[in-house]
Each structure stands twice: as structure tokens, then as C-alpha cells.
Image (cartoon, rainbow, N blue to C red; front, side):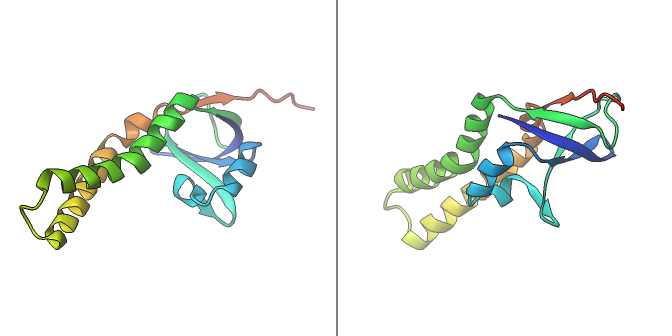
Length: 137
């Protein structure tokens, strides 16, 4: 996946990128795009950790992530929680009441997302930025 963007802000090794490229059309078709990106004033913003000193505010960049990582992260965020919920029901079986099974499953999903949050920095490190050298007129 590749997209075009402009560096809007750099602070504390975090880079805020406003995305404009072709990918925006694909994202607009998806009902879950507001989960992936930070929308403010109808701008599609991506915030990642980045400490490359050669990139400055206002620079044009290409944002790339390997398709494998897109599919892998999607699997981690959407499929694994469902599997955790179902597997927790199967393992517990008839040992406890249904309502407790539901709370147990939801609790395990909550713990899983805490785990994902802990490794979020590593997952977002798969996003690569490439500065576009613009010719000055």
C-alpha cells in the first residue's frame, strides 16, 4: 500500500502526516476508515513514531507499508478478538453460567487489546516514509 502525504507536524518523535493520494478513494469506501486514521476537519491524518531528522514540516512524502503487514494487522485487530471470544466459550464449556462466559470473553478481548497497544509501536514501525524531492521553480 502506498500513499502520498505532507508532513503537518513533528513533535516528540511523532510525525503527523496529511494523506492525499489515490488510497484516499479506497479508504473513503470503507466504513472502518475512521478507526485507521485520525480525522480532523475532513483531513485524513496518520500519526506515527518517526525520528528521521531529514524530514521537516511541510515536506512531501510517500507513505508505504507492505501488503503483508496490512493483512497481518487487520487479522490481529479484527479476527483474533473473535477467535478469543469463541475459544473462551469452548474452553469454559458448561462450567459457568452464560453471562459469566460473556464477561470472561469480553475481559479476555480487553486484555488482548491492551497487549496490542503495548506492541503498537512495533507494528507501526512497519510504515516507511520516503521524502519526495521537489524541484524549486
